Length: 134
Image (cartoon, rainbow, N blue to C red; front, side, top):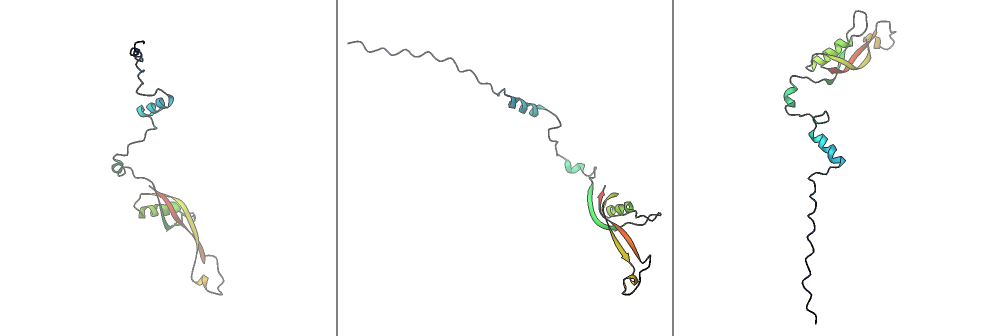
């Protein structure tokens, strides 16, 4: 009988597997690294200390109310003065009117039944109802 086969020789060790790079050099990885390393405008600003800076920089605010516009010397309504008054009542310095309203204001006698209205019995009053304050 034939001698038992000898232990088969061990297969040669496979060449060491190539070491994988720690980062994938693909396009998405490069874009991600660009954003991570950049100091561009796309990065979000830090809001640390935001509350402290609001004292020195007062933001615009829209306020609502109802203030009558006084008559200017030429007879037109002066709604700039009314918007300033509306903003000052809310603690701001000045304002610009965003929304206005107008209403008819009549004397009591003009509302009595049977009274024939005359010119000057009713006037149009303009109001600032919303203002952008600074």
